[in-house]
Image (cartoon, rainbow, N blue to C red):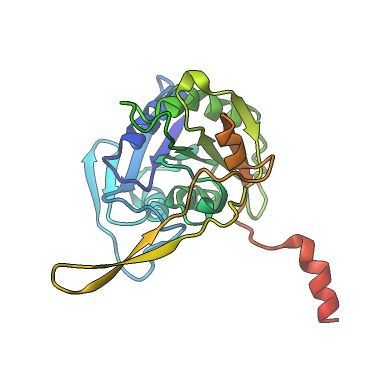
Length: 261
């Protein structure tokens, strides 16, 4: 199996090394793992692509490239230039921090998997929820490191992939903020919503007197509805959420048709 890996934390991020180990196990002795990741951190860029400017692509080692672009750019760079032929699977992550609930909509980790799905490739995004039980541990990614390959393998072998549809499925996996031994299991979940948790801005003044704004995230340990991703993660479970790029509110099309009838 030929696997492409990328992330949004950057080519030197420890989570990417965890993902490389997962991908190497999945690819097997005769497989290949290709890395095309951002040269610098690209957290929060979503599905952005560098449509109005070129990007530099540097080969750091065999099958390992750094791109001055976004995670979605990295998928495009791999398909269009870095890799000879297409990968069998695209993995994105392992992100430092959760990509559950509304975070999903901002995530560059998700953006890479979404772009792969738009390119008709099977894709999985993986993220590690952070919390007080692991934040001071030497290995933040232990849950992902121990359980990641098993989750990916089960998805490859048994999950629906719906090839041939206009907007094919991809999967969003979040590991709970716990040591590996405390993980309670796996749950299939919907995307959640943290009520009263929003991104905001905080002003600051530089030594030069210029005024800047920092973008701030909201609390990450607010529970979401039962059966959704963050709720499962905070209860100790790995969440697996099937996703598509189709943003249509299909349940409201009939109502809208009546409005314009």
